[in-house]
Image 1 (spheres, one colour):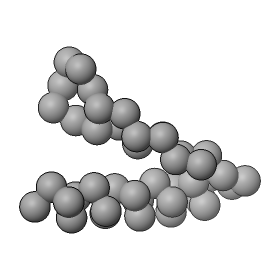
Image 2 (cartoon, rainbow, N blue to C red):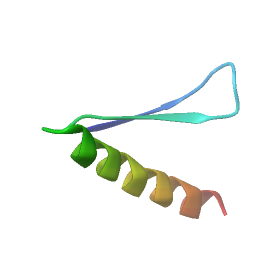
Image 3 (tube, one colour):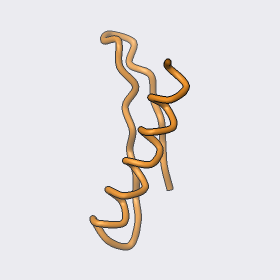
Length: 41
């Protein structure tokens, strides 16, 4: 599961990810961040 949240106080988007292991959660979060970065170009 992934949750994206725009900060109201900073110019950032927070990415929260959950999975069965920390490694999988990190991998999912990084993939979502790559998509967000590609859309910001």
